[in-house]
Image (cartoon, rainbow, N blue to C red; front, side, top):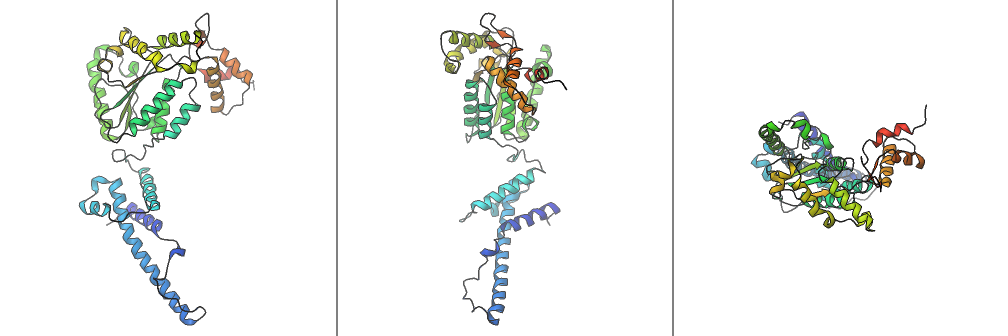
Length: 379
């Protein structure tokens, strides 16, 4: 016996599968001459017969659609009979039918939790991610290339054998949190609010060094539960290997920012452009800085010692021109008009280092949106 929701879905399936009136044929029989009484009665009978056959065929097809749909959305209730009827046969659905099935599955998941069975809230919008990284992220050509390539390649792997671990490094305000948010927004329909995305802040969630063992146990348990619930997760760090087939760990740290800035400054002084800075200029020195650091336990963790980090991604220091772009974006995000003079004024509010060259914003683009109020006309 079908419940109310199932009856509604059945009717939706049936209505979607019914052919248009123009497709109703006459079973291959000869048509009577037009304008005769015989033609009228025979035509009505053939139309009725054709409609009845089409309805019967649509009903049979709808039952198979229902089997496929229910096994996709409620696999735990998918019995052997439904599984058999949902199994591909010698013939297959037309592309339009498959699209209808996808639409219905997506629609149903807006009411029910489908996270652990093909979560339709996982969108993996690589086109959107590429556009966001290109348009909204300023001055970070290395991070843009590395993040997009690594994440796309990992999520397109049919059976990844481990989690993907990316470690973002650079000064505050250079875009590390911004990129993490972009990933959440383009991989999950609910962005950071998704049940498959977990954020942990060390100073907030793990404030006491003496409780490291307890924190590790609690964190491992939270990660395990998230992995059981979601087939693809975006999470915070752990000192253990992830067991999920689709888990991305992001580690965000200011560690290594000084060495990144030093390398970039020396290359600029040598006459190279910022866009010519490549990973080979930074990779070995950045990793050495992380391992040698005594200010953070990250460099001495199992993640680093056992080479569990797939990529250490440098975020370069931002220059005056990048701060202007951040200011422009802040105006646009608030639907405010701006002038070039206003952008210059906001960019000049930032402190630039080193003292002699004054090339890099010491705060990156942090607090830019709060500074807009200083240049807005009064009233």
